[in-house]
Length: 337
View 1 (tube, rainbow, N blue to C red):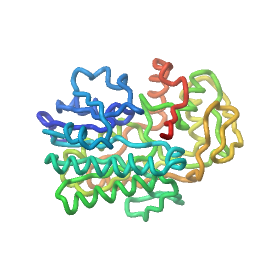
View 2: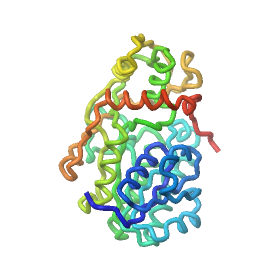
View 3: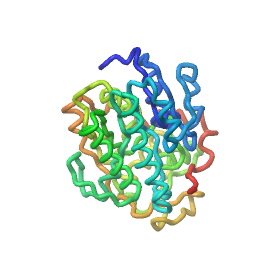
């Protein structure tokens, strides 16, 4: 793995869940790290253990002037800043487009002007849309959410910069990333919070929806490989486990990991409607029936494969939550502006 000592890396969204883990890894690798975040979702608490080792710049990826100043003397860019809300993308797709697509284009433009060596861009498995089995990188993307459209468009701009502007870019198509410091809203966090509180997890519908859960530490390892390996330039990689887990299975796994002997509840909640048993939680509309990623390309080209099992990763997240309950007091939805 390439040494990053002496190199400067800018991490957009570096105070967020995945971004802060990437920042930690870069600090451990002796890189000079700049964190660029508007703190709409990111938290300074995520950076507290390493704050004295990084430069924190409060800025928005839609603010081109501030972004370009932050990009000066930067060798690599890890672009993790994004609009993550499915409901926000549905309710106001223009906001979603501005942040995820225009914001990414701003990052690429600033990186090119500043002579950056490479950009690693956070994309999403949501670009594929509704699929019926394991999805490889050459699968035709047909997103069913505006969020997937904006992330796919960002990927296309990244490819143009890689192919025609001589700016190497790597796209990482994340599955369902989980782990310590995850924000409180998604299904696994809801299951864990209820279990820690001694309450049974609540599954919406039949619970047969399939997901691919990948531990954040495994994501960070692939990210570092992509930074240092020129073979990754211009490529897109699925970031998952290729292991199918139904939501019903996930709920039972959380119960087992908690060791509390809880029962799993089921609730009939229409897509887009609010739960009666889980306060403030809405079920996604146009819900994906399956998200399962074929990750053989990353193994074949970069020698990467996940190391942390879902049970072990969930145990780690449960332990973190038990010591950070104040972080998960309310479901974190973005406000449409």
